Length: 88
Image (tube, rainbow, N blue to C red):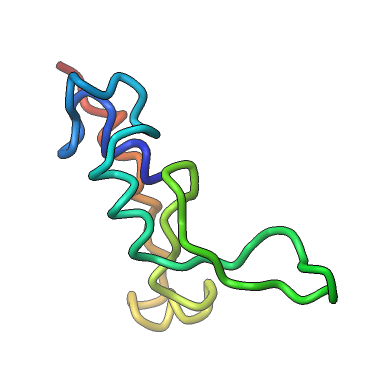
């Protein structure tokens, strides 16, 4: 999720914002992207909304088939939380 960017060790970590959800850089970066709302509106349609720090990164591919086609038959790994595997 976008908030991982504001965690210690992340590129937008700032001691002034111990909660990454409050970090203005993380909020601004997330808001640049739109995601499909998980809840329908009053007429039952799903609208797009600006992303929040709690939202996950959206995939650059429409589906697994498109990902396989672009990567020689293999679905690429989810690297959105790769920094958590790092050790200090």
